[in-house]
Amino acid sequence: MKRVLTILFAASLTVLFAARSGGAQVVPPRSPGTALNFVDARLSEVIRSLGLTLGLNVVLTDVPDKRITFTTAGPVAQQDVSAILESILESSGLTLIQKG
Figure (tube, rainbow, N blue to C red):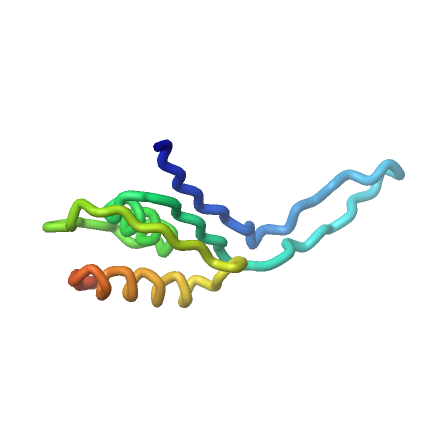
């Protein structure tokens, strides 16, 4: 079975499209945040991906070798990604330790 690990980043940067008239049209992003879709992904890869999404340096120790599947209905804010990471860790008997 092929593993699928997808993280979609909804850019918070404004995208500019050149209009035919020579001007520029500003198109704001649909939703700020990150949509998450992990299918049969290794727990360690999910933890690492969510940590990097949050801008964290990630060190993993004693992570169970198991796979998880979860998806969000739409983009989630960064503080919600943090809560999702903590929930995943807790449900796997792991702890998040932040230093610095």
